[in-house]
Amino acid sequence: MRLMKILGFIVLIAGIAAFLFAIYINNQVGEGKVKIGKAQKNVNQAEGLFSLNPATKEIGKGVSGEAQKKIDEGKDTVAKYEKIASQLQTGGVVMMILGAGIVIFSVFGKKKG
Image (cartoon, rainbow, N blue to C red):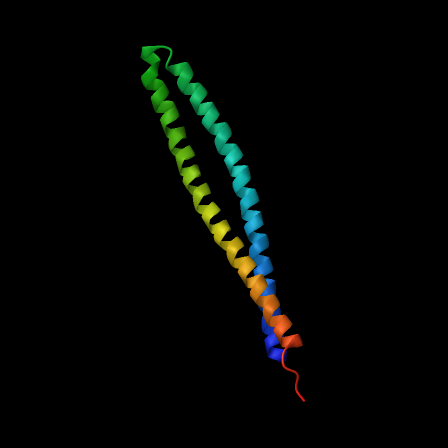
């Protein structure tokens, strides 16, 4: 039973670590979304300014096109990390429940004697 108790604590601690790491990732993703939003706003403003004159419209596309590619890449990266964080969060909760269950079972389970 002692081995089961140790295993339960290990699973419980791993679950807590996974859950906390998911929270950290979500915080970083939130900061990234704010930066992407600001960059998108700047690109939209630049496109608006350049589109006022047909002669500068092509220049505006060239300038904002590269920035828009990076913004799109950032959005893809954010989506990837959101998925990872969600899976870590779910896995962490499952591991915490499983670890707590193992510990409780090993403490209050069948008594020898």
